[in-house]
Length: 281
Ligand code: GLU
Image: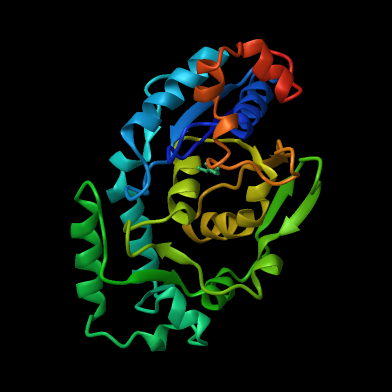
């Protein structure tokens, strides 16, 4: 069995990440499996090399071990473009020039709303050439045609959840019915978490996805992509989150909870495990 810890290095890891890492590493270790480390740094507008370096330092400090080298998504843009290309070629994805504010003002993303002068071949060649660079960008985003994708599937897209908050078996199609067509490739980064995550879970042979409950609502879309691409669906386990004292979700803005900051302030790794109410591995 294989799990993974997959942080995005857009800031220093905080206590919430310590808990997520603990959950993923502990889950694997207690079943005799292995937990991989994956750096989800496709967002070149926000990720920084020093934060990636800090992920390694913090996890080392906490005592976690992972098979090296860790996969860095920013080195694999062409892999993600291939998936988007396939969906475009199958008529399941379309370029979309709408901005967030167009959508707020009532424009609906839909294949026929793409008013620019790109034909499918040009879209494909733009995506390919963007993916070959270190910081891809596109003149449009690419969205999944959700209703067509669900119709094409023509069968249940089940997944099993074993986490404490959402235990059960779900059909991804049911949770997706009302959703806006999701973005498969963002304009500013030429790809998306929606594609890169499921691609890598497949590529890295992940059998159990153990991650925070805040990502539960993304799971149906990941499962849909897996079904469209013929990738197996792993088991899912979404664990509870460490909350700030205010009861809010921790974020990178809560600097006082960064592992880097806590270490500098003289905290020990034992203190960190106490703070997340976990024993050391
Ligand atoms: N990179 C995501 C995050 O930091 C986690 C992705 C996942 O576990 O699927 O929130």
